[in-house]
Length: 296
Image 1 (cartoon, one colour):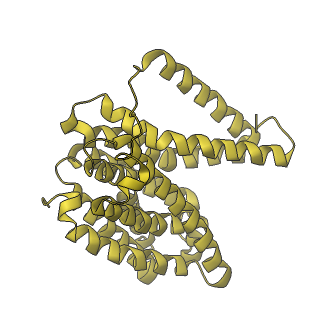
Image 2: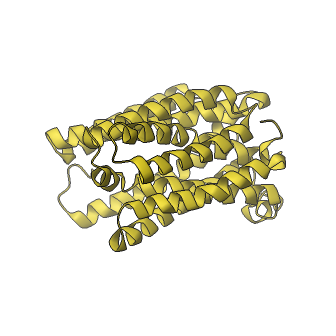
Image 3: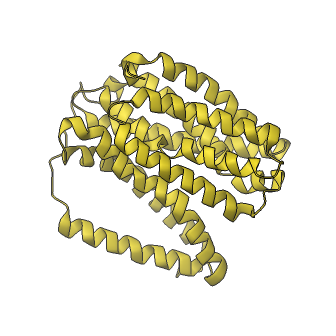
C-alpha cells in the first residue's frame, strides 16, 4: 500500500503498523521455533531462525537499495509487499499449529524482571544493540569519513560476508558455547571499531574492519535470544518477548543518541560510543557463567 500511496501522512501510519508487526513477530517467532524441536536443540533453532534477520539486513539492504536506486522506491516497496504476501501464504499452508503459553503471575514480564540472570541478559542486549546500531544506522557517514574504496556497496558486501560466516558458526555452536560466542562478539566489535578509529583511512584496513564488524554483528540476535530463553524453564514466550522489547528499545536509543552525536561531532564519535559500551559488555559476558554457561 505504501508503494501505491502519495500521501506522506498515510505512508507514515503504515510504517508504524509495520513496526507493530515486527515488534510482535520477533519474540513470537523464536518461541514458536523452539516448540518445533527438542529442548537440547533450542539454541540451534533460534540460530537458524534468526539467521533470517541477519541475512535480511546484510543481503536485503544492498539488494533493496540497488532496486530503489535503479527503479524507484515505489518499486522496492511493492516488490517487498509481494514477497511478504508469498511468505504469509507459505506459512499458512505449511507451518504446524502449536499452543501458546498462558500468562500467569509467575510468567509475567514483571516476574521475569526479578530474575537476576534475565536482567544480566537484558543489560547485555542494551549494550550490544546500542553499540552496533549506533554505528550501523549511520554507516554511510562512516564510509565517507574514512573514504573507503568501493564506497557503501563494498562496505555492505564485506559486512554481509562476515555476518553470514558468523551466523553459520552460531548455528553450530550456540548450544555448547554461548558464553564464548558472546565474549567473542563484543571482542570483535572492539577490534573492528579500533581499526576504524586508528587505521580506517589506510587502504585495505577499513575493508578488514567491516568484515570483522560483520563477524561480530551476525550472531547478535541469536545469542541474546538464546541466552534469555535459557534463564527460564517455562515462560519462554514471555522471556523472548521482553528481550525483544529491550532490543527494539535499544535500537531507538541508538538511533537517537547517534543522531545527537553526529549533529555535534564527526562519525568517529559513534566509534567511541561503540567501544565504550562494548568493553563493559565483554567484561560482563566473561563473568556471567551462571547466565551464559561456564564453558568457553
